[in-house]
Length: 206
Image 1 (cartoon, rainbow, N blue to C red):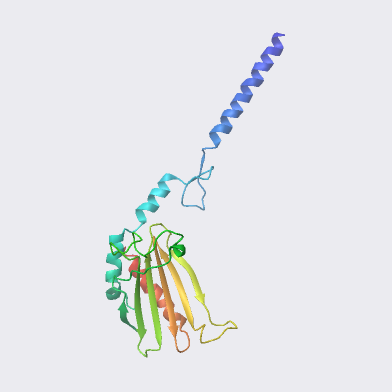
Image 2: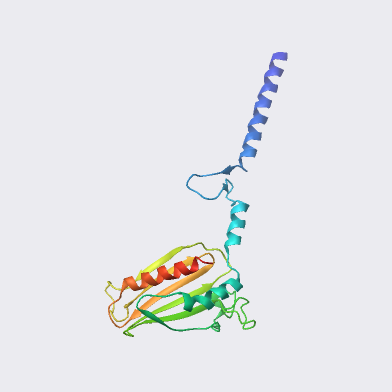
């Protein structure tokens, strides 16, 4: 009888030990050699990584300095700066188009204070037959820095006059940058790419 009691106690201890290991493993941190951030196995992002992203977000005052200096510092070969929205580009929109978040494209969603979240710049080539429209939009969320998409419309079976444009979209920290080329002649892809390179060089100062 004593022998069976000892076996039972031993099995019970083994079972409790296994449960303890399983419980602790749910909060284990995994560091992948292909990942820059540590992620818990339960899917929760490491707080250090969240803090780092928050620190990289540009505040609105920095965004203002960025757009105010843009036209003086961003030079695009073969193009001249023709104008901008000048910090007063507050646009009223249907709230449904902003996922019911705001009625004005401003930081508060209201007209006052006047803090628009987009600025537009126009660069025209020397022959005045090609225009680069550059939009810089401010968001409150960290996005990262990358090319988001490159949309070239020509080469498809659609009206050539309607498709004579291309767009490069970039993200930088919490900003979205859109570069649109429109022209009455053939597209010059190098022009859009050169504009993107000049803008990236400027953004990286902030």
